[in-house]
Length: 194
Image 1 (cartoon, rainbow, N blue to C red):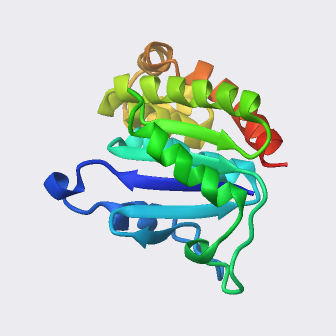
Image 2: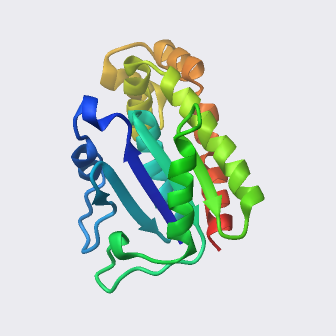
């Protein structure tokens, strides 16, 4: 199991933003993707590494969050609520979110048994955090358009700009390079959760 705990930074000064986080991952299914666990914190428990990664990438992009990832055995309550979850994955997630508060890029990964692999994943996710922080709002707009179409020319058409402008923005934002490593992050998440 993969448990992601996300704690808002400076909520007293910035206002509570957990509802925005929950809304971004509202589920159409019976189980919520994330739940508010206490105050300005939310948590999700995942069997699918790609689902966990999507939450982490959103929080890194949004900024202002301490992110802790715990992996290992875990058990959810009968109502599938992470708030009542138990096991090493939940303990590691708590350790990770506390450790993230001391890091320049506020993310940490802890694993029940595979700490070396967790360290590799942590380094990769911190790199994603650096790249996310450096991107401008316009670069994100271009990345979003490109991600929806998977074509620079279609993204250019949607945004009303030239193909070279899209290509230049993708190059300067290092989006293609980062997104090419997302499968590696998913693989590492899967490894540490087994």
